[in-house]
Image (cartoon, rainbow over all chains, first blue to last red; front, side, top):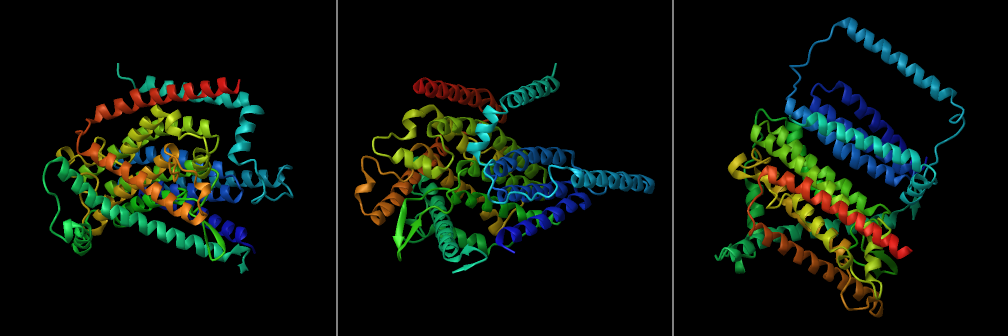
Length: 167
Length: 349
């Protein structure tokens, strides 16, 4: 077992543990903080895949900006464990069943996908995740989808301003 | 010596470097608190701290000792784990920036060439941004865990301020990156050091001013110290804190100042470059030591600028702060970015 494998297993265990903690934490603020830990571990995986740009952008955008907004909303609403509505047992059962179905679909999808079968992830060798290559790919091969998605963001921003405007 | 395919001597070397840089930053931060009080005293025409030691030089040690010896109080209604995590995160995020800053060129010691930079990663400056965006959590977690509405208000203010100014900071940074064509701080400094090359401040005067204003806002310095507005919020996000936890919050601000000064010096003022001197004519070790001194001088000048502004300008109101950030700095940064792009395109023909 070399260093990368050891790191991979540590990161994966941490990711799973903190993802479970997101769900079982009674306090929503704790959930958000565990979710930030999940993002950190995912960024760690990106670094193992030699995609440093993706790793750091994941941290800046998700852990640094979106989660701060999550925390904002939760702190201002002042949710706490006592205020959480108690769910019926049949609601919980339905949740477990539908979640299990979703898991089964996902597992079968991954198992049957021809692109994935018999292939291991490129550890430490691939270089598409480096900023130079990623930038070139985005602005040459994928320039149309890239620009269209930026228009989408712009329209979302305008929409948010329109909704938030007092009149 | 290889075990697990790791170069353990390199690890040891980096660990020693990390220890030196972290302790040096803390030591400088300690004396920055002292010089802040002295600068304030000079600007307000009074002697300032002058009792402990010659010229009051032992004052920061006395302050530190006082903070450590104070009784530690954790409020009953506070969320205990997060209450402790808050100052820890603030300090960690402040210190983590130092990993990518090139402190100088390399020295030769015991036949090994040692780079005076902990990690030269190809996304260096983005790493700084990632760490800066983590610094917000120190304030937010601390403010929320205190279970005090003033702390919470201050934390929310601090976070919204940091997010707003990060945008303008990033946009003004893009212009520099367009010129240098690299995200690695080492490469950016090397380009400015090359014979015949100018510092980036010559090409990016507006970009630097925008970056400086945003850095001040990120460090929560006056005129942007709304999270600590005493007259509105009692004391700010660290109101419930006492003892060294309070000290960590106050100290993190100074470490942040040092790190942002170092980043600004590297991006716009040639990093460890000594002006009007070709370093390649010197022996490598001497050049490295002179480089460290040069960078430290630049940092000290920036720190003085921070203090000068703090004791000269009053605090913004919250709406003024947001207007400045969103309606002045971001459009200016966008214009600066477009102009830089246009000039580069024109030069390339």
